[in-house]
Image (cartoon, rainbow, N blue to C red):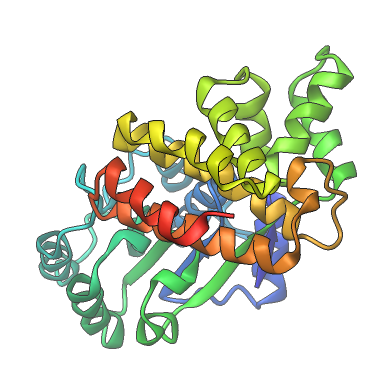
Length: 310
């Protein structure tokens, strides 16, 4: 099931109504940062706890108000400040799941970085998904459902956040940012991949040094000049892991945009063949995975040297 990149109460009510208001015990919400999956998760959690009559979430009952303020005791976030979600947290969730809700209709567990669960943690979650208590529900957020085991995916309904059309995105931005010059809106839209959250963030974020470095790396790759590419890549090993991860995420978007046959590409990457773009995107994804697994910037640079050089 696909949802547009911005989801208000009305959008959710329409989908729930079409499904006969039957809520699954587990949803996977997939989409990039800024795509609206956190907003949708909040609305789904509120709908599961809603005490109002008619369409849910009503937005006015006590349960909805608590849910929207992130104060509902039975909507529980499972997360960690570590790079991966420890299996310990999933086991604690398992134990807690068999304690009945404090006051709500259901007990809703929200895992905002479900894609960061390693195999053992996902298998522990799977045991709970196979025979969950009747009052439990799970919301798994990830940039792509492919990071989750097939056995986990098979026990969930996947909701994919789809980008907005240019017209929809423009209208939404104008509504939220009245008075902003059209050229600034256009620039944010060009960089957002069609997602409202990303566009709003970019609208208030000037070009950064990381964006400039990402563009230089794309230009070096597109030039076909190995020396030019390496001269830009090698100094990146001095970046912190967090900064390098952000740079590669920016670069990855550029490659994805260039691979989209329905999008007019005006960047230097337009000179590359689809195979070159695909190979480059795959190399970037590998470097991102290394960094997410606590690899160093030096390791990521070495991977890109071997897998991405022109």
